[in-house]
Image (cartoon, rainbow, N blue to C red):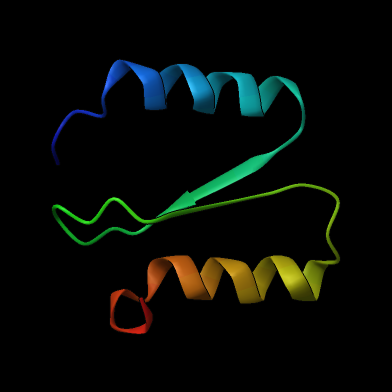
Length: 57
């Protein structure tokens, strides 16, 4: 797994503080991510599936 740029790491840390969840595509080299806050559990599952299924984006 490659290192994330500093800006992405700082943004992820800030997202944790504000209660935002960040899901990244696990495919090597793919920079797609989905960030969400205050969604229903079903919507969180849908967004997670979208972010982690490389064939969908």
